[in-house]
Amino acid sequence: MARYTSLIREDRPRVRETSAPKRAGLTVNDLYEQLKQIAVLYTIRPGERVNELELAERFNVSRTPLREALNRLVAENLLSFVPNRGFYVRQLDRQDVFDLYELRRSIEAAAIVLAAERADDKDIKALRKFWKDVLKIKGKVPADELVAKDEEFHARLVALSGNNEMVRSLYSINARIHFVRWVDLQERGHDAFAEHLEILDAIEARDSARCRELVETHITWRMEEITKVVEAGVIRLFAR
Image 1 (cartoon, rainbow, N blue to C red):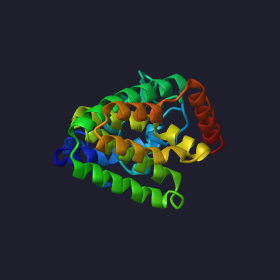
Image 2: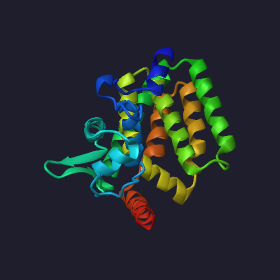
Image 3: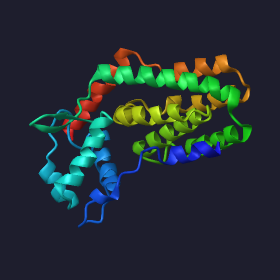
């Protein structure tokens, strides 16, 4: 597991420091992380234009590093860019969310089969302890923290496969559905959290068929469910 833990902590490429903002002491990576949170959490509403001047003043940076960070978010499909018009916050589209959940299910189902074959017992035990600790605090911490813990669990679960590219792909998907998962947790609670331990039981038993079945059931969403959560998310955004 050692060679995968560094990927879980940081899966993004380094950016040359030559274009880093000077006055605020922020690197482009710092700026990127700040802007990513704005995009992931829809601090700016879906479909709205990103006000570059306002952001430059807010973070006390010039337009050059700001645009470099914004372009990275475009490359990750977290923002869109329209020539001669600027950057826009992506729409909260139910078909896009549905497609991302299908992709996530495919990746995790394949990864879990590999994990049943390859995972080290001590790494499975460590992940079980991590999740049991999360279950102890689930009623005491805010939803955004629980979503982050759930994302970490699934990243570590996929890392048990020994396939770094699967982990990278999952990070990209999770960023794009983070807001939807937060809304779903707010709406429906955390009934599915106990299923994580069943998945770990199946890995320990080296039962790849059971692993796949549990993961696919755990992640599968119908379009009707996606539609309800997206609509609830839009209501929350515009009420905010």
